[in-house]
Length: 335
Image (cartoon, rainbow, N blue to C red; front, side):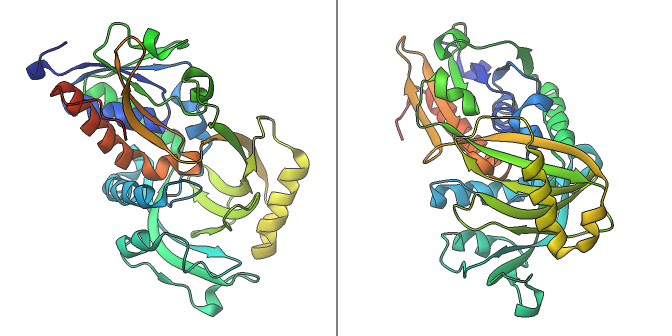
């Protein structure tokens, strides 16, 4: 094994936001990092994400909130350079048709500066509760490019190739970090990993400056509006175990109709793009360390569902901690 003074030789499987942030944390800590990814960052599920920093469809809540708070801090700093990083601070409102006071996110609410309960007159029709906050909103194509550039600046590299097994991926390395997302279903294999399909529509923005999300727990249809530099992102859906990446015209029409109930001018907005992404869901995020069959240390970091952007930097911190334990001869430790 490589000496501590030189850092470890690390292979990171997966080139989406989870893989890239994990790779950056490791490379900036002095490890020699190579990301292995079949697809370019712009071709991953991360590129389709709406980019709002807010815990969504991710378990366990207690850990997810802690990861989210860390990512909020990082993204807030990156928002000082929006053209470069793709992160901006944008005010908006998270609402629900029921009172969401006991939804497990109390620590998140406590951590977000200036967050407050929405007043009754601020709530859209049909919503019973809501929170107003100024949070990071990330332009994902720009952000992914920034992450690739930051990784390269830290000495990390990206190799485009299919990974057939974790053992093969880490054959010449000291440790492998598995950030394969939906691919973990076959790669680990882990049958608990499954897609939650999300469809969205990008339209010309008629002047909407705030984000707005209404997403009840477990609902298959949501309503959100996210103003991005490239257009207004309208959503969305959350269809469990739906594998298709083809936009459904009827679903797209329903998405626009829901948005137009709040902003009637959106019914006439020019459509710029239709997108479908498959969120890599799991009953709970797997962020653990183990030894593979041949003895190679492996850190798993997958199953983030719809919260990848929100928890990425917090999870990257834990990946770094686990790899340091490997380096010091104390890991891996199952968790």
